[in-house]
Length: 156
Image 1 (tube, rainbow, N blue to C red):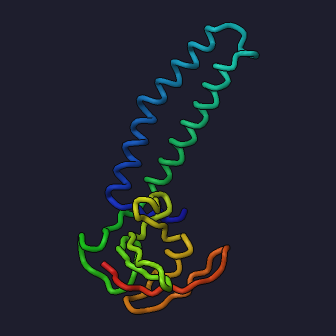
Image 2: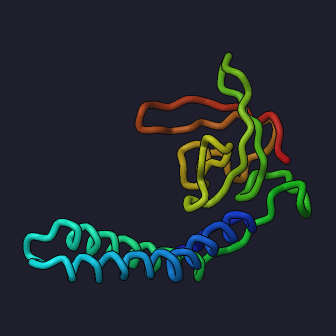
Image 3: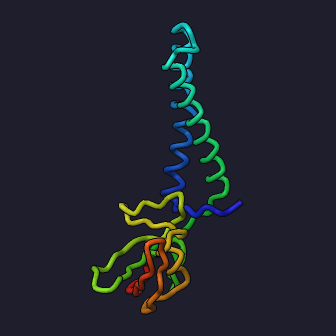
């Protein structure tokens, strides 16, 4: 099974989601199913069908979170432990592409990636390309839309 990299904060958020699904959400869906079954003909009951679909989604997400958390490896963000010269999962990185403005983000595992929050996946084209590289290096990034170079300005 592949390792899932998570920050402590990301692990906690996913654990809270799992707890919510197991307790509150399961109960809500069970109540909806019960009410829909009392609503008469199950074959033509849209509410029953919707509740069954939601139940399947909730149970699937619970299984997904169980596996994700069981295989999680907690990472330390740079600045919260020892510093590293080379980029790794957990590194805070500033890069610059051509004449564009420099961008700063944290490399995280795929389950926690959220570009709007400045968190990119170690499996994304940029994340994959810059791993193990150091400040001052120019790295080629290959994407489905083409190839470009980024310069690593700062790590940590």
